[in-house]
Length: 248
Image (tube, rainbow, N blue to C red; front, side, top):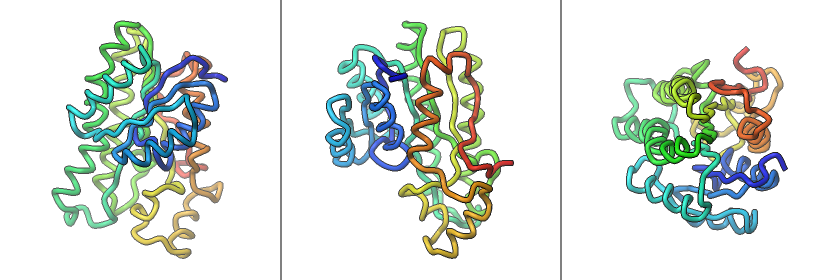
């Protein structure tokens, strides 16, 4: 119960790594808003985890939608302790000059602009309370890029730098900011990363991970619950690799 009494928003919380974080947060005693562009999936997830969760449909790349999410969470919880910027997308593997402008804009909107928008909506309230934790879900792609995922790699590199910059600026206000860097995992994005989900492609990916397996939602939930708990009270500005040794 390391998060007992805490309140949290998890964007992209209805599937993949986000769902793993939601499940762990609830198990550790938190009340959680499952914020997802798929409202039906968010509602199903809230039913699964029980009364400690509520669902909210949000487009994290849209200013008004993010503002409505923040207002709904503050109305439901009274105050917010934890924000997890987990929602993310990628483009299909392709030479960098062949990725369409629409795909580029979509990746940057969801992976980059969302962090700016949630900060605009929620950091002032955290400053007022002189307390809060922000966790950004980055990627090993931001540390050790794979070819043909260039603009996704760049968006996650931006997130890591943004995390460190936010941590330095917000520390005097009692707000901690960290990031997690998972390797590819058993999530809906896995096929997009690989281009095709075949035994051969999986073997190729796994060969780059010393521990020999993908990240799981449970791995991410465990790491996130620690970094967002008071046990990590002296940790800010880190980009923790949850990658089975991929970046060594």
